[in-house]
Each structure stands twice: as C-alpha cells, then as structure tokens.
Image 1 (cartoon, rainbow, N blue to C red):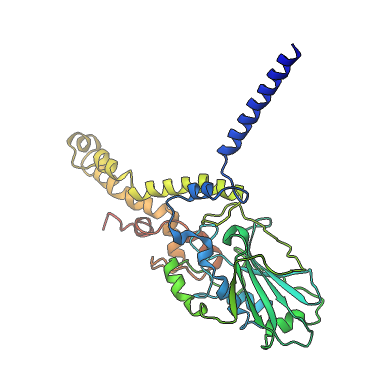
Image 2 (tube, rainbow, N blue to C red):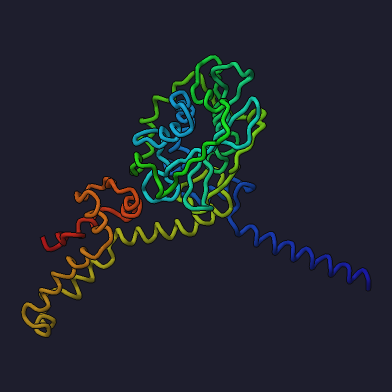
Length: 362
C-alpha cells in the first residue's frame, strides 16, 4: 500500500510540473530565452526596424573628439541630420537622447550614460561610455562605448585609444569638479535650441553616418569589456513600450510588441483600406430614386456633400497640420510640444480632407 501511495504522489508531481512547463512555454521569453522565440515575435518585420541600426555607436564615439563637456556632447547627439535616428516610442519622431555623468568615479575612470526618458520612471538606457587614464598628466583617454544589451545584444560596442591626443571632454571629465552633469531635458521637455524632427529610412541614415565608419582609432568589441570599476545609475534600465525591434528584449518589451504593436498595425491597415468608402456611396447616393424623393429635392444631396467636409474639419490631423506650418507637407512645425503629438497620426488622405474640406467637394 505504501508503495502504491508513493507512486501516485510521484505521478501527480510529474503531471503538475509538466503543466507548469507548458504554461511558461506559452509566454514569450526574453533575455534568458532562446533566439527562436524572439524571431517568432518579430517575424515579417523589415530589417530597418532594428533600433540598433538607427543609433550608430561608432558615430557616437567619434563625437567625443568634438565635444568639450557633457552638455555639448548631448547637443551633438541630438543635432538634426546627425547621428541619431532612434524612435523607440513609435511616434515617428527621433527620440531625444539625454546624457548623465556617472556619480560613481574612480581615480582612473569616468563615465556617461546615454538614455531616453519618456516619463519619470520610463527610462531606456541606450549606451554607456567609459573614459580611462593610466596617468593624471595625460591629455587624452582610452574609452569604451558599450551598447545596452536589450538594444544591441551582449558585448556590443567599440573601444578606442586617444591617450596621446588632446581630448577636451576627457580633461573636463577628469577635472576637479564637485558637481555631476545630469541632463534636465527629456521627451516633451527640450532645450530652447532643439526642434523635433522626423525619422528617416534606415538606408538613408546609414548613408548619412557612413563618414564615421572609417575611424582607425576605434575597433569593434565582441568579447566582454575590460575591467570597469564604476557603475551607471541605470544599468540595463528598460522602457516597456518599445515599438522598434530589439536584439535582446525583456519579457515585458516582447509582450508589448507582440500584443499592442500588432493591434496598432491591424488598425492602421484598416484605416488605410478605408472600409467606409463603399458604404457611403451605396447608402447615401443622391441618385437613388426612393431616397431622393423621401428627403426632398436638394435635401439629401446637400447633406451628403457636406458630411465629408465637416468630418475633415473635425479631425485632429487637420487641426494639427494647420496649427503647424499649414502646408500639409509632413514637416514638423516649430512648436516643440505640439509637434510630437500632432505629427504622430497618419498623413495622406486624412490630412487632405482636413481643415479646408477639399477632399471630395473639390
């Protein structure tokens, strides 16, 4: 009898373990998962949608030679037609990249974090930069540009040796200062000189940053980084609602992309196909005998002509476009707060029908 009870308990335990394994397998896996699950979720997406393809770390490292301090480095990173084409929140505009200096310091190391902040707790780390000096009398520095694991994958980055070169940002970073540079700017809170601008196609972006590809002072890293003594405040920090494809997403990022992004694409496809086009002509056609008689001459036809125009006036894209540059050419207007919100809806037929009601009355 005891043997029988033990056998029953053992079989029951195995059954429950198998059930739990199946339940776990149904969830998309992430950093600790196989690459097939990530591939399945991203299946069918264009290669250009990879976030890492739109923020070139080699170009980032090259900018260190141009900046004098953290604030200027941030300005160069966000320069229009520069090295940044990153759009993580999927609004069609390039994300603002903030620079924060490591509070953790060593005698021979200084660091910066590059991040995008979409809310108080919505932070996505993009990359970290480590400057190193073997002697305090050096005018330059060695440096690592290390990509965030979620965006770029493990051990992705570049290293360079500018120890014998005058590097102004290194002199600033290793200088005697009590304060740390922490950018006060983020999404929808930009510096006065900054204007939002739209993302461009990845092939166009690659051509734009090609000039940074030939840089003998920097080499690609495919093995674990050297000994780093200092730490960022945001190591591996992730933003859940990322619309772009990532190399090694977190579980939450993968679930969001699969569910929310998929729904967004389905709705966008329906809007583009215009399911109401046929019904308008069939139901409200002024040429139909019985409806024309019931509505009275000129009554039904006037209303049918006016509806498309009125609908166009009330749509948000029309309002945003008129409030911006008024040309409907898709360029972001000068106002920074409304640009992000007004630029996100679809262009095309909606914008033509908005504001002046020329869509079908013209």
